[in-house]
Image (cartoon, rainbow, N blue to C red; front, side, top):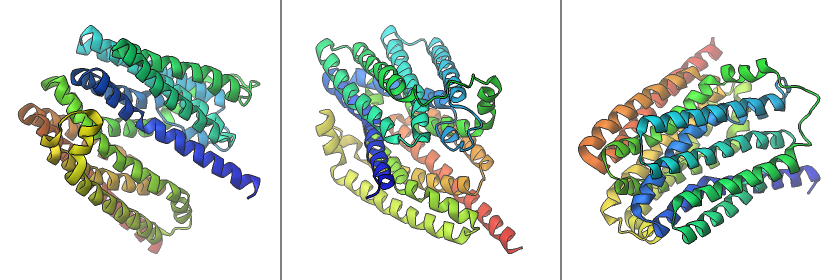
Amino acid sequence: MDSEKKLFLKNFIWNSLGTGINSFNSLFFLIIVTRVNDIHTAGIFSIAYATATILYTLAMYSGRLCQVTDIENKIKDKDYIANRALTCLIMLIGATGFLLVKQYSGFKTTIFALLAIFKGLEAFSDILYGVMQKNDILYKSGQSLSLKGFVGIAAFLVVDLITRDLRWACFAVIVVNLAVLIVYDYFIVTRKLIDNKFKINKENVLSIFKSEFFVFVNSFAGIYILNAPKYAIDSFLTEDIQAIYGYIMMPATVMTLFTQFIVMPFLGKLKEMYENKQLKEIEQVTFKIKLIVIAFGAFAVLAAFLLGPEFLGLVYGLDLTAYRMNLCVIIGSYIFYAISYINLVTLTTIRHTFIQFVIYVASMVIAYIGSTLLVQNFGINGATFSCTTTLAIQFILYTIATKVIMHKERKKLEA
């Protein structure tokens, strides 16, 4: 195996490991809180983490894609870092405003604030990971994520066991992430990769806000849509119900991760097909991916019906058999979400992004209205139906848009 293939394999393995741990850390945190503290505290953690995740999209703004695909290096690493520092600051200001409006109890406010800081550090680290990726040492970011994941979860567990106080457990995770960010991410790895000859260009920093606005809105709306029922529960129901909804929602996120895992290897191929004007081939590839996702989703729904509540009961130490149908319906609704994501990839590949902005904004409005009305009247069942209805409508909108646009693109080629 030559050095280039070894590096690719090393990058892939470490990045997959680090990303995987990072994707599931909220699951481990929620299990720990439920087992060590109580279901009421778990409910507070669930809605606080969901809010921090939405705020995280504000801190990330354009994500790493803009930075990594800037092959000509028109915008320097320092500019991207400065922009990310600004978005993290804006995120914390937004979190403060949110907490002032909500007027939560002192304990709940502290948990929200700590998790917002935690996700802010995560977002800032990501821009340093972008520097690593541009220099083809993506494995370094995977090592960083793995270290933060393993040590962070261990610190959270130990501190929570000792103090029985979620606030100190959250603070412990912040300390771990901050230490790794400063020592490893910056001083050991990225400091020597950043070109200090260039000064921060204010125009470049501001141009990122303008060029990546639609990317940010779509990301923000996408996360809100999935969490809208949690906010309705926060307004009308109890912390215990919030925790239960968090438990039955968690397995559905596997659908999202599975879809991304299947789609990612095809991104380069889809881009190449579009450049060669092979629209029919793009449709064939994405159709096959959809069939795989539907098959996996059907298996997941069957597994959830047969063993889901029992398995979750063992994990969380609670009897969740009354929520068997809620679990199955939510996992089923994420099949709609997964297919919408594949359509998103298709439309992005053929350079149609504004229609996605329209779809996401419409879906966000539907999610807000639907979750408010249904949760208020039907409780946790309303939250389940709201999630399903929103994702089904988004699926319909994406399917129609994709079919119409692909048809128009084919007509252009034939003309």
